[in-house]
Amino acid sequence: MSLTPHQMTEALDRLPRVIASEVQRAALQLAVDLEGRAKTNAGNRLRRRSGNLMDSIRSDVTLRGFDTTIALRAGHPGDTYVAVQEGPGTTVITPKGDGFLYIPVGGAVSGSGVKRYAGPGSDPQTTVQITNRAGTAGVVLGRNREVRWIATKGPIRIQGKRFAGDAFDALVASFPQLLEQRLAAAAEEAFRG
Image 1 (spheres, rainbow, N blue to C red):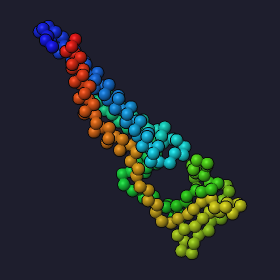
Image 2 (image 1 turned 60 degrees about the vertical axis):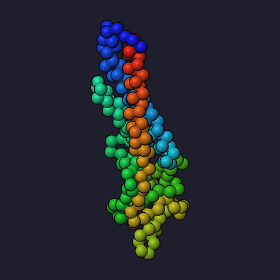
Image 3 (image 1 turned 120 degrees about the horizontal axis):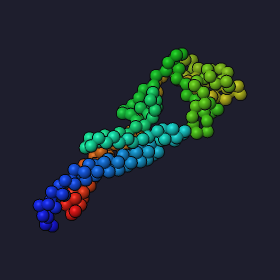
């Protein structure tokens, strides 16, 4: 390809706009892919109950010229569920109040596994708590003597699933190559005229 000096000047004048446009397009594509991968990971690694976590996964892109920020968010302000499920490592949940951690079962949970009540005290069907002799575990029974809550004194450990972090790590690692391909094609187009 041979360009006249005038054509070369025009191509160089177009280049910053073309580069900025391609950076933005690549960032937007990465954000869409990132959100999709995080939702896929969450669907594969977590039990879907209410769908609130999946619905809360969002990617955001902030563009200011060549300064581009890509963010992946999950959950809502003050929501500890996402932090526990995402990790890193193991989260330990320890009992408070009377020293028991209450896990809803049976009629205390909905069909999708979401607890219906904040605890046994707010469950109108509970009648009596029975604990073992050591006082470290037990059950809370309902009016018909069915188990509605399991009580434990020990801490519960939940291993993080890294649904968002793994998506982010995988796609961010591929971003430089994607950007390089887009910029090479854009530069070629700018000089083609």
